[in-house]
Length: 252
Ligand SMILES: C[S@@+](CC[C@H](N)C(=O)[O-])C[C@H]1O[C@@H](n2cnc3c(N)ncnc32)[C@H](O)[C@@H]1O
Image 1 (tube, rainbow, N blue to C red):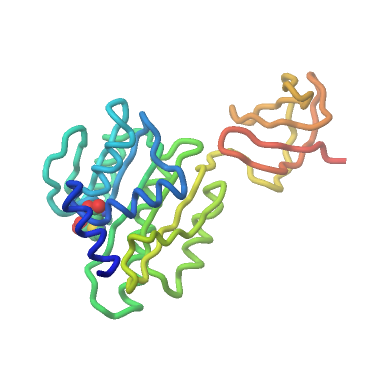
Image 2 (cartoon, rainbow, N blue to C red):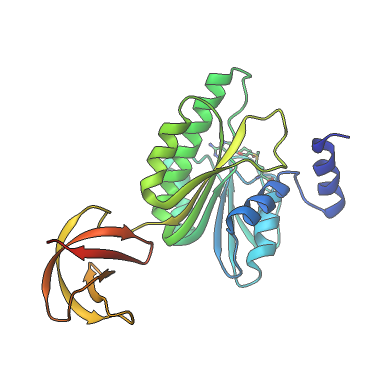
C-alpha cells in the first residue's frame, strides 16, 4: 500500500474532508502554527480538510475563515467566503471580515496543465496573492504558510517573503504525495517594526529594562539599547528585529 492510500483511508475513517488535512497537521507539528483562540484565515480552503483541523486546534474561542472560488459545504464554527483570491473584491471582503489574523494559510493550487514551468509559475502567482493579503492581515508575530510547486522562481519568491518575517523555511510534509513537487513556505513571526536591521536612528531613552538596557520607542515599537541611560538622546544602530521588540547599540 502506498503513502497516498494510507492518508486517503485515514481521512475517510477520521471524518476529514480531504487527505490534505494531514499536511496541515504535520505543518502545525513542525512549525507550531495553530494555537487555541487564534484567528486563522485559510485561502483555497475547499473542500475543507484544513478548516476542520484549524477549527479543532483553535477551539471555540478561535476564529476560522475559509475562502475558495469553489463552494465549501457549511462547517460548524467556520465562516466561509466564496471568491477568487486573484480578484480585489475577494481580498477586500476577506480584509473586512477578518480585521487582524494570527495565521494566514494558503493551499491554493492552479488548475494543472501538466506543463511543469507553467504550473510552477501559476502557483507562484497564487502565493503572491496570498502574501499580499497576509501582509495586510497579520499582526506582529503572525505566521504565513503557502503551498508552492517547486521550480525556477522559488528562490525569488522566498527572498521576497523573508524580510517580512523572522524567518522563512521550506517544509515538505510526509503527507504530500511522493510524486508531487509541492512544498510549503512557512513564514514565522511577521515583522511590522518601523525600522530594519542595520538602520541608524536617533532615539530618546525613556525607561530602563530588567537587564539594565535603556528602552526607547520608535512609533510605539520598543527598542532595547545597551549601555544607555534614561533621559539620554542617542544615535543607535539596529542590531536585531523581533516581532514585538528589537535590540540596538549606540553608534560610537
Ligand atoms: C488543494 S485544494 C485545497 C484543499 C484544502 N486545503 C483542504 O484541506 O480541503 C486547492 C484549492 O484552491 C482553490 N483555488 C485555486 N485558485 C484559487 C483562487 N484564485 N481563489 C480561490 N481559491 C482558489 C481551488 O478551488 C481548490 O479548492
